[in-house]
Length: 214
Image 1 (cartoon, rainbow, N blue to C red):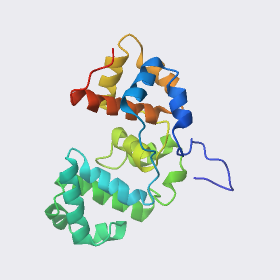
Image 2: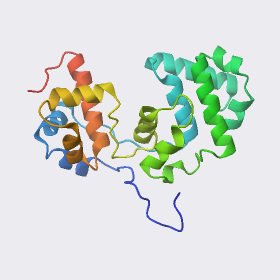
Image 3: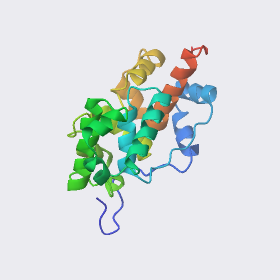
């Protein structure tokens, strides 16, 4: 937690991608990825980390459309997405909104952690990256991948790369077959989040029929 006006021990969210794109373009392969996939939107931190994590968990392994439908039904039943309301809602009602029993267990655990203060969502954005991961992964159903996605897309942290993500590993193997992953990632620091987003974007482009690099 940030105390007495101390400088946070993490890189704050980016306001633009100019410096990050210039840094990443020092890697010729990444430079071509940026050119082929164009400018990506700048990520902004969520104003409600708790609700964002709940929605992220509920949407995992679902299509965008299915996740949005479940989220809408959940809001319709609960009215608001906060810890107190979730804890007061019977598990059967959460299941009826479309959550699997595993996700019911996870969102209830997240709500319980928020309620007891075990996870301080009001100040989680002030924590270093690894402290955020350490706070979240004890919760059932929250692994390192989920915590890293939360860092990237909820807190807009600029230097996160989830090596546990299959598409990212495949992208590294496809584009850098003769280089160690650690070496590639080290060169992308402190903008690994944007690099990961370009790997995802290029993977989507190739799957859609676009010509692969090289």
